[in-house]
Image 1: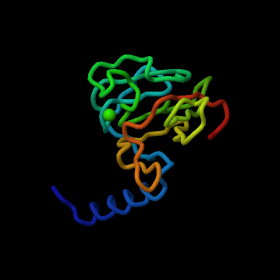
Image 2: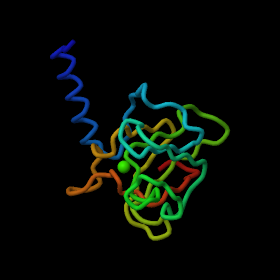
Image 3: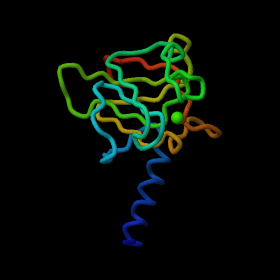
Image 4: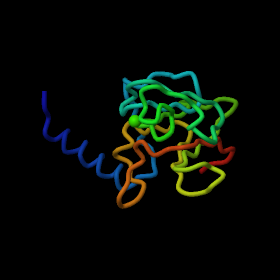
Length: 144
Ligand SMILES: [Ca+2]
């Protein structure tokens, strides 16, 4: 069943999401299920494939083995991300860094209730997306 008007609205929403590339989607997807952590990421878009779950931070994803990823670790492998979906006693924002978080560089803000269903659609700069580009995550007590 195709509804051109609805598809046009979805297209406009997708364009707005691309323009605001550092903001997560406010929609939820049935394919995303609780992963057992405050920060969750998947090998593929739309919450598909192996899931990574963490409650704090990880300064170097090259230390986390994940057979099936290009480097056989979680480094440069995240393609979708979801953070904790409802407030609790501990509600950090997360920063997802291109490099190690002690080394500075670019980061993606993943706030409480954040959802990035496809990091291919989230621009990092004029030439790159956030897909398969994250090397560390940092829990942030404040808001990012
Ligand atoms: Ca991936």
